[in-house]
Image (cartoon, rainbow, N blue to C red; front, top):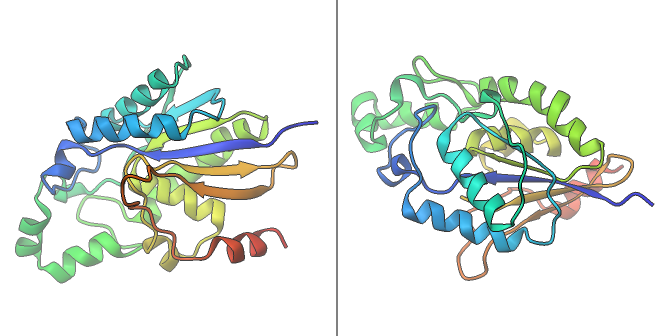
Length: 227
């Protein structure tokens, strides 16, 4: 009997730009001490899953988060790196403090850039563009690994993970904009032997409040997915 398999999505821990409230995008910044500790907290949450495939973005904060988790689990893998899993590119906003950007461009305009599905900041990407970059690679490569009965972990970013969640759960653009991916809170998708998605668990350490949010009830969601 073939067992079920898992896809684990992990957003990197807090970065130096997160701490400074700056737009990060493709800027290659380090994890903070807090970010490294967040990655360590994910280790215990994942200890019962035999991970045998690992993917990450081309950005150091996601790579370092993954390395901390795999080392803590005592798992040695050839990690596959691809820029298609990178964070949304914020273009001309990268490196700017979000409050300063609101003063410069107007808070309403910055909010539109941040929270619209298909509006991009100057020189950057919208969430839709991030989806269009990420999902073809996810479908043709990573998901096929899951379908070959592997347990796959992806360490990536808030918006590239949002894109994958939107695809897997068939969320609307409005629903995905209301979805939050907490730092180092693993989203564990379970697939059965027929490659159907049968469950989602969002894991977090009980000592801390979860920052992840899915604006739809999982029971009704899986009922609609499996009918």
